[in-house]
Amino acid sequence: MRLSVLVLLLLSVAVAQAQLQWLKNKGRQIKSNVRDAARFTKQAAQGSWDMARAYKDMRDANYKGADKYFHARGNYDAAKRGKGGAWASRVISNARERVQTIGGRGLADSAADQRANNWGRSGRDPNRFRPKGLPKKY
Image (cartoon, rainbow, N blue to C red; front, side, top):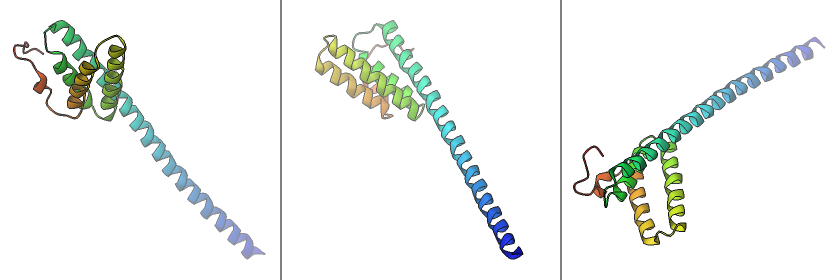
């Protein structure tokens, strides 16, 4: 009888230790997921600010032919932030183009804007779309 009780006790300790290890690993995984979510959220917020800054600069510059440059630059800056920034730039750009298309702007102009958006978001140099004479501060 004593041997069976001892075996059950050792088995219970082994199971409890395995469960503790599982819980520790699960805790680390949860911590990592929360950290990743916080990082993504921060990047998305920063990317949104990058997009807003590019829009503000475009309005301030009021420079003919600079639209595509500011599209590319905003997406470029946002995407440099990481996955969250790239996500924010994609959502903002797509929403903006949908609204402008519904508002009466042509599909060709919207497609050209999207090409500039994708160019910048892919990490390529937005200066490809920079018009001659645009002030250097932009």
